[in-house]
Image 1 (tube, one colour):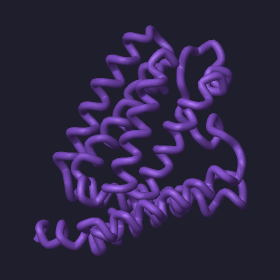
Image 2 (cartoon, rainbow, N blue to C red; image 1 turned 90 degrees about the vertical axis):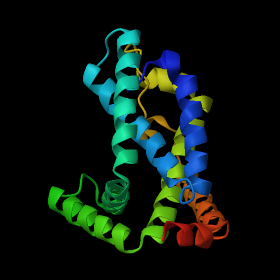
Image 3 (spheres, one colour; image 1 turned 45 degrees about the vertical axis):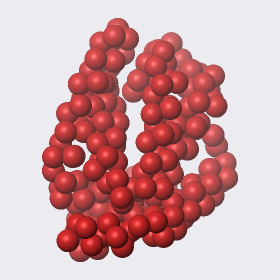
Image 4 (cartoon, rainbow, N blue to C red; image 1 turned 30 degrees about the horizontal axis):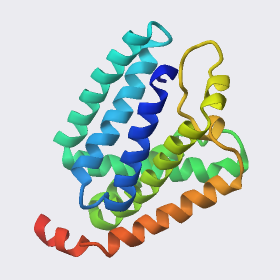
Length: 204
């Protein structure tokens, strides 16, 4: 949760970071880890602070973001495993939506573990896929926040907090998911055809 007063710069960061992740996630994986570590750390830290003074939330977000970025960048291989685990958990949650409710924690745990194992075994393709889809979704969240400022304010009425939940605060409709898949597949194609093999040899 972030204050509405910083909605525009935060949305721009998410839009730009999502674009980098979507179209150059494999080549700039450490940078992508840093950006996403910062975003996740900032959101978690600001959530713990709650709806206090704006400056308190911003400082907590900056501190949490710095810690999150450091943890993911410092633990590169841990970051790769976490990407796979996150992708596995995301897939099971997405697949569960037609049935309503939340997936059982055991199913999420198993899918996260399988995702982490798969990420380590097939690093290049998992990283490309995860960064393309994650980056595309982040771009949509940032774009929605920029375009739907009034909607975001209504969603967080009176709390002076910007809630980053595209499923509820973002633009409704199936076109969001169509756009997400289309942008992500474009990102996968771009990453596979722009120096991926060269970078792979460098890593070895």
